[in-house]
Length: 510
Image 1 (cartoon, helix red, strand yellow):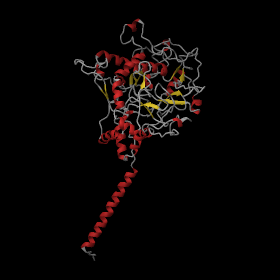
Image 2 (image 1 turned 120 degrees about the vertical axis):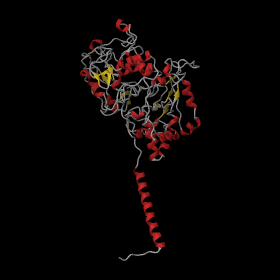
Image 3 (image 1 turned 135 degrees about the vertical axis):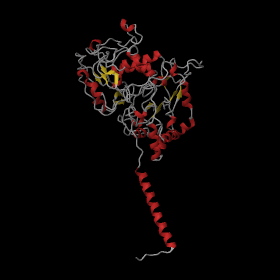
Image 4 (image 1 turned 90 degrees about the horizontal axis):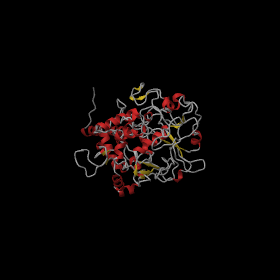
């Protein structure tokens, strides 16, 4: 066989050309692969095996007993009156939920519901990934609407696979500001309120007129730790990195408790100054149950009020009064639950998530989503403390890794709900704590998305924006200035897709 023999120099040129072609092909493949790759929310981490949350470590025996009792009380299924309960009150249910032995599946075991309500049980809405969490995967609106024969219509904005939404109306018919909660349901048609004739609000008209705003349930974990952060720490953190914040357009200010001048820190707009106020309001506004803080029923419709007013107050019946765990009303036991339940625990950081944590600070996210605060005092009760701190020793001297500055910030038209609460204006919201984010299913105050990337992008809003994909944008969105997060979002958007992915991986580790 004849073989072509090339000179050495020619052979080198051929080999070099082949090598160059291979390198070019490899580079093009890599570039094409990089072009195809897009950062993506990895999704929520799996739920724990049990729905029962952990208490704060280090509680004493009495505090632990209060926590366990609180789980029983705030898992109760509410009816309208004492004689309407279908099983004994204050004891474990006879038809327990497989995931929560304290919670009945169907049979009512408590009382006090007023004529209007959003839910008939605390943890039917606060259940992801455990009791005390946020909105669950299956919207409970349909179950709540028709419990005990209720004739309620489920509003169109309650997507069966979306977040459970409560509603506020922006304005009254005369044009004055409203901003209050308009309950989704009434007790009309229920077997425990046979004479009630009370219609639901006209939600279709509110949606059509763009006069509605939505809120979804917040996680309740670790609120005792947040309550134990001193005001001075929040103010000092607000002043920190002032020049960098100014350059990035970040402001922020506390929403204040009007009657004593302290910093309010609970709720989407930091409108509640304490978990006690939050608990009393939740029982009255969400479940219609009057109590020591909110003693008047939200509706006085004839035939619809079947409970004492106020209903949920310290028990005076002998068998309850003489039991220290039973004398306290359920709404106050809800306070004890929030005070004693532990904070969400993060997952171990992967290499990507560790890199994302570093980028989270470099980009500027941590300027508002402050990683941690310290509570006052020392955790060891045998040591003297210069600053006493919380009454509960287990809450003293703790690092609170909440990832929030607890301030309210202007977020622009894309997030504005045109509701004013205290010192929080129409487009202002509290920096939502990010702990527990890794297991949340829905994001932003209205639950508009289950995608972290969308949530990040919706932090961006230019001045005079039309509101983008804001589900409750109104015709006056031109009044809103730019979002304080704009420059940080721009920095995020200039990262490589791999770096964006690292930040998403970090967020899902929380």
